[in-house]
Image 1 (cartoon, rainbow, N blue to C red):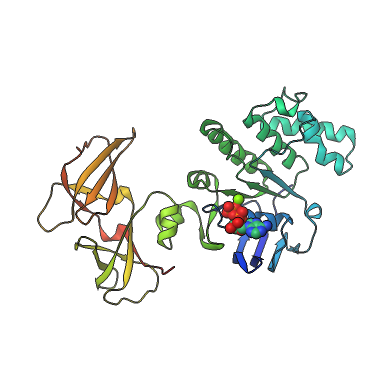
Image 2: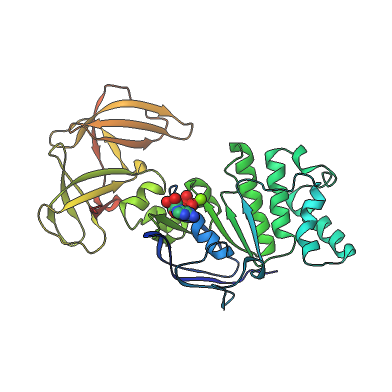
Length: 358
Ligand code: ADP
Ligand code: MG
């Protein structure tokens, strides 16, 4: 079944006096692949469980396909779910596991046979139908869980860290397959992960969560190139973050004094007061940092290490004030530990945010 829309309107979930998600609103388009990304405890599973109906929001409304489901029981929501722990029925074979939701729905035997044949092809389980579920590898078990979640053709599929228990190779393999299955079926997917590269690679859009609120939602490119704050910049891709105070500004750039007394430049983001001594954070991606021979009056540092990654070299540098930055360079340039270099970037490539008080 093609995917349907999901709307989460101002949903809050409190346990006692603690709000674990706060005023979360998300609009998910039919057939969209949306990831919820955030550190452990940021509220990802709580949002997913609220969509599934296993958690009841303290406040707010959830609509699926424009229908208010906030008070609807989980089984009436027609949603497929996959968790990190496979949760297969251990006393059943692969096909018995997959058939389970169809039997629950009272489907005819012949139709069940057809469905199982189609879904085992789709998820790559052909030949394993009679195998007892426990006699499968982790990757195969997760394919069964996926098949069982998709076999009744739900318009919405929720996945909570489904690949978290698998090794890197199997995880990357299944990332591609899940994405492909979603493309073929058109199912709306909400995918929970704390792995940013997984979220960047798979999602149409992602929502970054922190302390139960949405920090930013956007396409992978938007979040990477235009993070709304230092938290998102740090969480999506690699980022150097330097704290300092504002010492000068014009329309599109500002100057910041950092710990070692040097003054560096960036682009101010968000409407914060451009006042002298405002505490700010400057965020610059490793690939935007240029290293050069030391120059009088420029920001300087000492190479701590240089790590070769095939397509690039990651150079770790200690600045005079003690903070460290990482630069990404082509492998043709080789830096030596102990070497002194100047460190620079163009102000367009550095984003400056007001420092948030906790
Ligand atoms: P995530 O999936 O991002 O790791 P969760 O949604 O599981 O985060 O949890 C968010 C917060 O809510 C955590 O601090 C967690 O301890 C708390 N929490 C989750 N479920 C309960 C519960 N049933 N009772 C009390 N606190 C809970
Ligand atoms: Mg979780």
